[in-house]
Image 1 (cartoon, rainbow, N blue to C red):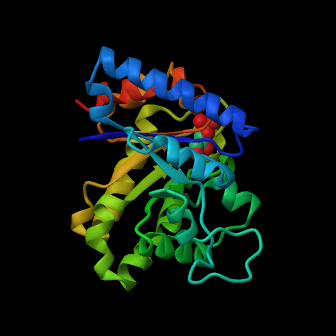
Image 2 (tube, helix red, strand yellow; image 1 turned 135 degrees about the vertical axis):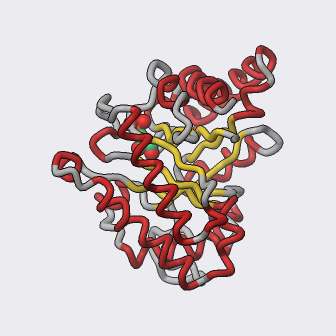
Length: 269
Ligand code: 13P
């Protein structure tokens, strides 16, 4: 099965100049990696998600390369153009050259109070614009300590389940246009990670849960995110339930991003 390694650049880098420097490094590192081992990008799909402001420039530079470009969010009010200050619609995102979007990241849930309703709107609009969706779920430290991980995940996954119940015609396209990213909130940017056994069991639960709605989704891609780096990627990549990684900090350096991709390309054999 093909692995996926996705770089969520969050509110980085600070300037267009720095974005170009990161892309220069990334494309040079990919070329060197492909020359050394052509299997890496064949076995592992790479994607990066820059800020809205950099989306057009980044997607233009990535055109014709093996790296896909995603947005980090879309507007819940994507049905039409109009008076939604500060928002970017799914159509605008697709027009800027992105083919995927991250949705429901815990930082959006935390700082922007993203609700079930707004996420249902966002996922629906993304798919209507033919954008693939990387749907993020994960528990907080308190929920982890209270052993509520699976309950929290089930509740967050209800967005996807409702969507499928309402719009059966989406099921076929979702098998290639939906990725679930399990990111425990307490592991993001902290250097703390769950054990591989914990991640594996949670991923198995996610896969079973999604397959319970539609059998065609039984092979859904489930990524792990939260403090993945060049040193620990191997152990996650070796587990059959972990199909790749959603990477924050370590995606801002081409070297560590490519090292993670190399680990998952080996894990996918
Ligand atoms: P870090 O890799 O920096 O922990 O961030 C993970 C993340 O939130 C990716 O979406």
